Picture 1 (cartoon, rainbow, N blue to C red):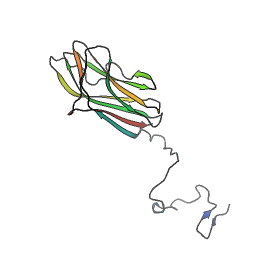
Picture 2: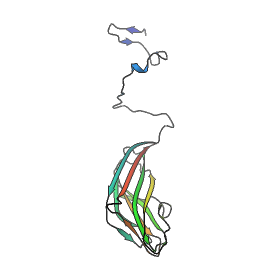
Picture 3: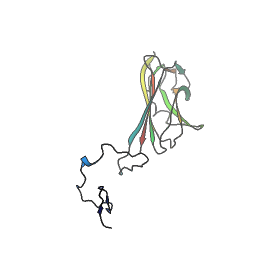
Picture 4: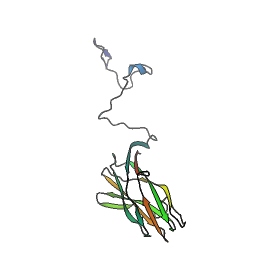
Length: 188
């Protein structure tokens, strides 16, 4: 097909890749690129991008347990992923304390459409463990879990906790120490 330049400056007949390198300079391009309705495919190895961050903070009253099996707390938050192939990094920050307890443990439950599963293990998912003193010991703790929910439906995350034995563990929020759920959605 012959290359034709019309009187208005329109060029036809050039196939993809038909222009030599350097024919178009950066100044020839628009300052923005509108990809509305387009799908962009990144080269292999360029995934793992954070596509959304959401923060849910709240205040609540103390919850305590001396149970050595996991019990639910009322501390929940919801998140809805934008893609079923994305992962969700859940970070839950809190203020906790214990008295005469031999370890205290935390985990998360995830509920999607009425189906609930416990996400971690009874020991390794709790980052605030092992206090065995005779007095209250309050400290800030955090629970971090990388979830692969495989859904675009709303997810409810609930904190659960238990005492290791010999006492109780309390879970406290107040106006100076609010709790946070931070959700970071990560594309593969």
